[in-house]
Image (tube, rainbow, N blue to C red; front, side, top):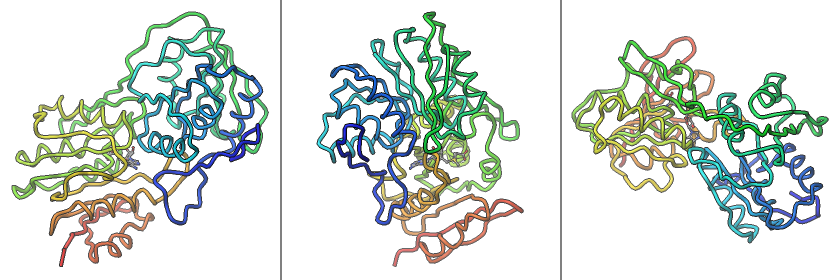
Length: 375
Ligand SMILES: C[S@@+](CC[C@H](N)C(=O)[O-])C[C@H]1O[C@@H](n2cnc3c(N)ncnc32)[C@H](O)[C@@H]1O
């Protein structure tokens, strides 16, 4: 990326892939940077950056000598930022997770509009509590992702809102916060799964936070209950629904619930505890798939894989999850996967494990099992 001042920034998506076809920045990042560069903020200005995708905004702000604070729900985005800062020999920045309070003293806010409108609503609430009319909030997204309802949300929750013209299919949103400081409203959304006597709490950025995902629901009756299962991983755990059922079915097993979203991990933690799973029996961890996972004696990995990274539709995370699962499985350990039929997981698992069987299927979904048979 070449910045408005002509300085180059080397930016990579994370984790690095050999034949990467996707860029680590987009037109919305470029538009936002171009606009903020024109504000001529002084060095040392406190810039709060929320939902940076792979660190493009944070690297640019660090390069300008701003006091940069990044807030992210994504471990992948945080790790990408650290690596991109290092690749450009830039000063480190402050990184906060989406669960931490926002800093009190800031000069400007740069916000990549999140996919989830509940997350946007939560972040606007948080911003309303720490900003006033002297602190511009400048948001950016692909033009097609900014709806009238999005602008109404800014207007209602934060303050006067106008938009820019579209440029390379991206648009900016300029919001001047009101001076009042509303109380933060509880961010958790809770729903029941009566068939399984579960009540699941969801922080705003959790996948399927309003109701149980249909694929997760279909997977629940196929989670095994076997005394031989000692270590079980719920890979991409979301609110931890699969981890919870596995813990119930297998009282002697240790359960790992892993997700790259801090809010997912916090939700899973909460839900396992709320359903009386002893804290000594499980660990909820924010991680990029199973990178740097310490155990190689896993008996069962359960996975309802994602098919997006940020806004891009991709199956490379599913592939990474399958490869990581294979790496941590014990001999004869199993990977249980649910996915839409059209995603072609069957062929992928066959290629990777040399075997795959169909555990259940309906018109739309298929549950597959691959066994790790070491020779
Ligand atoms: C389809 S959802 C499944 C959530 C939950 N297991 C369920 O069945 O409702 C996929 C999950 O994978 C997580 N995810 C995406 N990329 C990941 C990565 N690189 N490492 C770990 N988890 C990831 C997402 O945050 C999301 O919670």
